[in-house]
Length: 457
Ligand SMILES: Nc1ncnc2c1ncn2[C@@H]1O[C@H](COP(=O)(O)OP(=O)(O)OP(=O)(O)O)[C@@H](O)[C@H]1O
Ligand SMILES: [Mg+2]
Image (tube, rainbow, N blue to C red; front, side, top):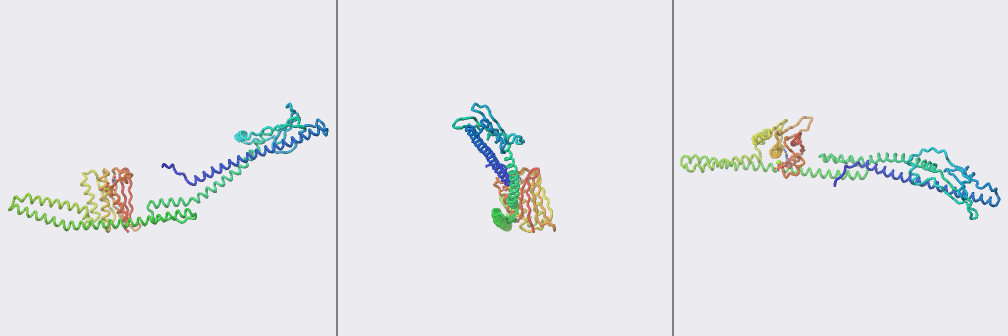
């Protein structure tokens, strides 16, 4: 599954809150507008009913001669009453001729609402809708009363309501979001501490432990991470001890085999060679026909002695014990220079008290350099390879040994994991067993660089 670029949780939550607040605001604004329109319609209906009743009363008075005939209709009293909405009232006869018309309410409006609001309001609520009523007496219609509300005044009132609401709500939402942003940031702070702690642990700092947190979820997470680090540390130290033991056992075994082969088998071969030489000497005097056979035995014995020497060198380079690490490394490098027909030029640089280290460090360093040079010759096609061995034992710096092996060949580190070889794994195990660190990176401009650091104190 492909995961798109992850977004910050804090930002995500704030976007969610702002979206929800905007939706709520929109809902409230719609409700306020609906309510405002509803009130206006209610008021219009009430006004219409009250005028209707008064006109019918006026008609009744005129019909029963309680009032003079020309006193009907009289709309003037409504023009004086104060009310919110602007309204025009028109009384017309049954043929539609206007008899009387009065308007009241606010007529000089400050049109400060935006055009989009007016358009939206008009399309949703259709303000300024006329209301027409028949004026009847004794089931006979005498005229029509038309009420025409002032659409602009309606829009003005709705906009005033909305403006108040929007102003107040914007301040509330802004304050709320700011406070939430700070609060979420504080609540998520432990996540950053946990992530950087995990990153440090994955970089090898397994001594690090996460601090306790006040929020219980983070506290439990930190506890679980610390527990995991404890068991990982224990597993690694068990593994390190085991590797150390195995490597020591292997070296002891090799030392034993070398001694046995050298002392027993080597002595036998030497004896055989002495006998073969004396047979040749005797045969040349008395039995010349035995000379070729005796020479064969001597040649085979010499060949077996050569094989034995190589095998002993491989099992345990005698140089380390007799010559010390620096000389045996130099010997190994010159051996590679003489056997690879000049394809790769091997060099070695050493500094510090390298010859004063105790076993098992020298034999392990020897094995590691041996594997690195063998890899360079097998895989890198390098023109030059450099082995650097440095022991720093200043008073200020902790006593440690740094080994760097670089070449300028071809190396694709990403493909190393696919290899079925065990050389690099062996190096890693040796370094772990000695409590050191092992890093492997591509050399600049090309090739591979292996860096090993082993504490000596
Ligand atoms: N100096 C190097 N330059 C280029 N590639 C290298 C180098 N050293 C190691 N490699 C690559 O890393 C892989 C793993 O090396 P490793 O030593 O573990 O195995 P190997 O040499 O193939 O076999 P083994 O060492 O078990 O005989 C190699 O197969 C090779 O592809
Ligand atoms: Mg190898």
